[in-house]
Length: 165
Image (cartoon, rainbow, N blue to C red; front, side):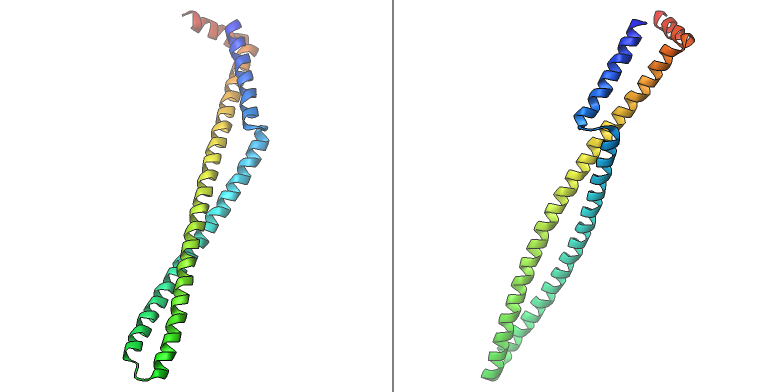
């Protein structure tokens, strides 16, 4: 009977140690888990918006580069100084637009990378919380079973008999 009580007490003690490691009660941990899950979902939405913005910026850059190529072709065919001057100004504007598009794409890539790292961190935190909660629930179930053994003499006798056999 002593090993059962000591096992039960050891389980209660380990159960009580799990949550302080998590820094809170099970209810607080569940609430924190819900917060982290909501933050992860918000980050996923931000990732989707960034990916869409990046795709749009890339499409715009392609259009700008096509316009730039066409303007350069027209410049080669220009007959008058006025045409050349007008096309040169247009080419300068298109180059500036292309540079801005490239900068936007680079910024989107950096933002997207940061969001992905944050999502990975949130997923890791959720996995850790799930593991702690699962271990806690498992220990509580074991404690309930051992308490039932101690509370019911017929079960206790069965356990003693099984251990003796």
